[in-house]
Length: 170
Ligand SMILES: [Zn+2]
Image (tube, rainbow, N blue to C red):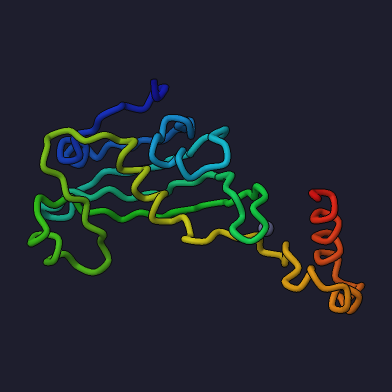
């Protein structure tokens, strides 16, 4: 289902063997993430290394994807590139998590094997901004009033584009 990636991983065994995982997972495999996406086309690229630091099992690496979400300003679909660096230390309890050096994020694991999808999905959900918006001014704040609309700076291509798009939608 995940191509050459395993559905479930044993993080301690993987760390002992210094395993590396790399590959792509289709976005539609992430059910919780799909709920917040405008569409679930595309994939997530993961590059993970499992290793030990003394007795700690670590998962380090990068997760990259491009999500399509609704802009919270104009409600049109926007592309949200995400590049997440992870540095997880596998722990069994909150108490153990609190003792971790600050460079690590805790991954609380109570079972021998965990879902790779869940680990990746948690990281992506944390990385999505609460209110994703276009980087440009996609919505004229005072577009209802003719007076202010005429004062829009004509040399800003984004504001003109936004007006065109808004008009096209009416
Ligand atoms: Zn927008």
